[in-house]
Structures are given as C-alpha cells and as structure tokens.
Image (cartoon, rainbow, N blue to C red; front, side, top):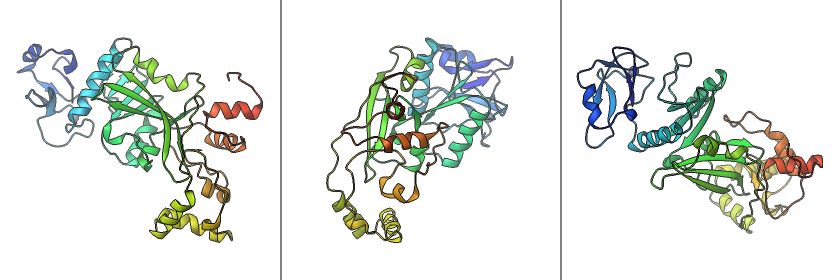
Length: 329
Ligand SMILES: [Zn+2]
C-alpha cells in the first residue's frame, strides 16, 4: 500500500514524497486508512517504498503482496492523470468498503489488474461500484493480456461501445504504453481477432485516451481466416474436445451431422455469437459483467447484414439496418 494516515488524520501519499523526504515519516505513528491499525514504512532496496501493517492479521481493504508491476503501473498512471485531473491513489471508500487503485474526479474508479481474480469477486466489485454511481475501468497487466483465446475471466473484462465494438484495455509497463484492443471478434473455431491502438505513457490526456472507444470511427477489421474449418472440427472431435462434442450433440439432436454440415461461412463473429450453436438456440445473450447495454440488438443487426470481406463496429450495422446512412447517432 502507498497511503497511510498520520496522527493529524492527514493522508500520507508516498508518491508525493521524494526519497530524502521519507525520513520525515520515521518515528511518526501511521495507520491504515481503512482498518485503522498501525502500519510501518518499508523502504528497502528491492521494492518501492510502501506501507505494511504491523500486525500480520490480514487487512481486507489493502493488499500488501502487490507485485512491482502493479505498484509501478499505479504510480505511473497516478502521475499521468495528475497532469489534467483530480486523482486519489488507494482511496478507501467506506460506503463501498472498497479501495480503487485510482479514483479520478471522484467518479471514475481505475482498477489495475495484474493477476487472476475470481469472476465472483470481479462481479461483486464491479456491481458495488455501479450501485454507488461510480464508473469502473479495469486495465490489465501482462498476465491478463487478451491474447488469442478468450477465457471466462477475460470475457467479464470486455467493454462495448457503438464505435469500438467489444474492447479490452492492456497496460504494457516494459514498453510504457496503454493499449486498446478493439473490434474484438471470434472466428468459427474460437480464435480472437481484433485491432489495436497504443498510447505512450505521459503523452496527452489520459482521460481522453480512455474515452477513445466512444469516439466516432470508421474502423474495419479484415483478417485472413483459416479456410479449413471441417478439418479443424474433425480433429477436435477425434481428440474428444468437450466443447466440440457438445456442439456435435446439438446437431444430432436436430437431426443434422456437424461433420457433413457444409454451410460454414468463413467469417468473423462478434464475441458470444457462435454461429455453430446460435442457429439452434436463437440469439442468446451471453453474460458480460462490464456491459450494461443491449447486446442482442447488435447481434441481430450483425446477422441481418450481408456477408462482407470485413467486420465493423455495432454502430455501422445499426445504421445499415435503419437506413440511416452515415448519420451519427
Ligand atoms: Zn488495514
């Protein structure tokens, strides 16, 4: 943790102290802002200076096992935000019993997620922020970068706008960049395809960067797709991949055989719209805990649009459907 309170109830933020100023804190009685128990300054050579609870009993509001990546990213984004916004680091919110990594302009909670967490915990934290009127933005460290395949956790960290489609934020500490993966789609065999845009740390206004997915865009994604879908499916069934066995079973139940099914359009699909199953299930909206907008309309418009050599953001399909031309909605 990077903050503590002193005897005068003032917040001590270590990011505002230079190395030499740290001596001021020696001998002061400092406490955890949330659980109020005593903390001590740790100023070693390996880790960044930080506070640790004196009593080893775990405090549920502050983590002391933060990686160097997490601490450093928190520090970098704090200073970047500070150039243009009001920002608080590790500010304990008593009514929520939560401590966002950064709180921007009192309304935007920034969570820098560098390690796995349970979907249940992610959902609870997200919903608590939302219920109290906060916007929460999850930015992912290296272990949670999007990669080629979606996991259940990553699915719960996707956002959606009309202009960027499904998108996912990544932080790259080594290269000092924040990266937007947008227009995220899956092909028939579950491989991810998306566009990327990178922004260098400390260049421009970070809040503006984070609003990029809302800006009008004429993005289009065209990727080379594997043509040999039947061979892939054959091998998955041969190796008894449970996912594909289940799909095959659905086909049997409908009196069809997946292996002889010829009408696989070679194209990309929005996340969650699996062509191989939706023809039987109808458009079922999968669960995305960061997204509150109506995804089924996007799916509906997407499916109604004639096949093309690429895919577009949801707004494009919505306009095509309503014959709205290029009008901005
Ligand atoms: Zn505590």
